Length: 127
Image (cartoon, rainbow, N blue to C red; front, side, top):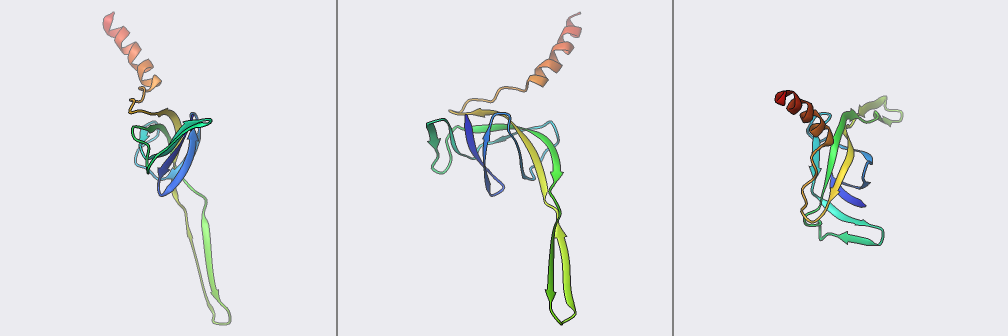
């Protein structure tokens, strides 16, 4: 199953376990991020296209890291005028991993790591 997600003014085609870089989103590594602006969702020939978004569809991501893009330099020169300018920019990015694609208003499943971390605490409390 795939989905087309809109974030940061751009569109990304994602499937389960894909890793993408998007414009910076709030959060820390390990957090779950849910994006609900899904433009299309489907599998094979069966694709649902939204008008403009698909109702009840969402994609759950795990925030892998906050990163920065490559340095982009710009340079302006006016010939024979002894005039030149140089500058640069590095974009802040967020690396996301797709955990789940939900449709029809279904709630995303809780993180497996959280369940595993809770189990030993419960076992020690019972003993």
